[in-house]
Length: 225
Image (cartoon, rainbow, N blue to C red; front, side, top):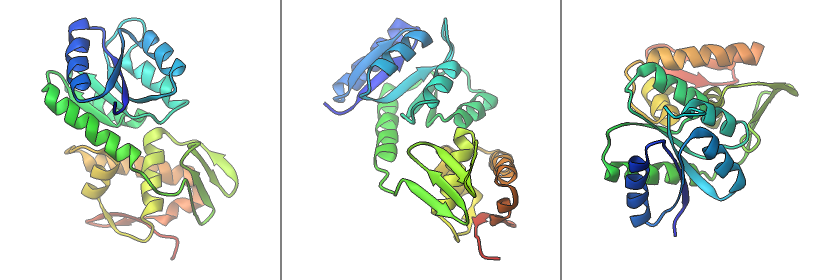
């Protein structure tokens, strides 16, 4: 048996299709028909490795489920939706969604996406503490301190700052940042990345100057003036 996956969708037929394909690929599947049941099953089972989460559901929607889970866990979340809405995608990634799949989709492609996300998230071998110029990031607890003071970051702001710290001194093109942090092709990358950089700089205070704009290319985190 490979990994345990929680499938959350209010359509029984959709859950069955996903369950069948994932089970044939060796995954153990747990099902939930709404957001509240999803939270109950997730928090009572510490071995869930990934969540396939529908957005539109009764009792509690996918956004609510994602917010509650991200308070406690970085478990990979793939959001499923019938709407191909840009604002939904941006909200999902800012909440900490790892992948976004629009219905209808090929079950085989879904399985491939699941495998890719698991490889990406479980294959991380970097150290858990990143530190530079008084900025300290704990990747396990999701806590960032600046000169010893805790600073709150959204999930996507945290991931972007983490990417900058891990690549200190390297000029990072916008497309590279997008593919590494957002994990999808989005034509509005300039606005998306620039908005998050602006927020991170503000929260870092005077240390925000270390995130330098490389005109015509992207950004570089560098503490040397």
